[in-house]
Length: 358
Image (cartoon, rainbow, N blue to C red; front, side, top):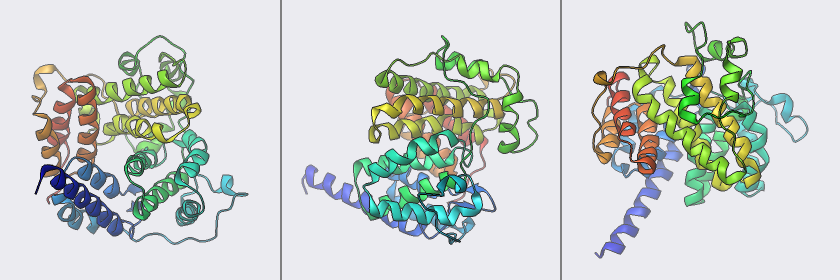
């Protein structure tokens, strides 16, 4: 078989594997145990994207034991009353049904263009998992459109809408700081004894919070907004290496949330790129404020960077869904910057987070 034929066969095989995984996962709901996010679709999309299709079903066999059934709806959401249902987790099944119908009625890009500006102010939904799952779904649809990928976008948007949650006390960027120094200036919330909702609720009253968000250098135009968003994703990912000990799972989202928004930009009109940057920056800063440690780790405490391919291999062997998603983001950052700290951050995650046996 010629190289070109083998490559075509591999692409078909990878595509079919993801569709099979989506089919299994779409029988389950976006949450389990009350509010924990179903990371399955995001993790398997990352594994397919990085050439690890052979491990997917074995990984799912273990992961799906914790998941719950797809929730049913109670009464339909309409074009007239969707605002009242936004952020109402009791309507999760209704939101999933709503977007399933919308994506059958209209092209997916049209649905995304309509709902992105409605959902974006609630970017903290599900500890930012609503937007993260949407970013993974859009990345796939930009490569290939089919029924399973459309269904995945519908579940992602429905989850985001049901858990819609804003970031309090934010201000549009108007300062002079780059993303790395701006993140260094984000204050920590005072009480870090409980979960993310308790921590985010403190933001508006945290001294220096609003000023730190406003301190980011603003973007002038759509293309600069995209470049600034790249800088935010890069800075948050590289920062993880030295700050992961604050809370190794939750701080991953400071990097994966802006990365998800960045992956969605090609499917959006450029008029939405500026607001997307502002929301992604606020989400990343909020996670840092909620979970960032008082001091960074000393350099001598940090692991050495692996080879590029080894970084994602280590995450898959480790098995944790957060480590897999972070490794996917870290490879993007390494490819853009050549900074080995992105790869070392994957090892930091693997060292800190409890593994999932697969």
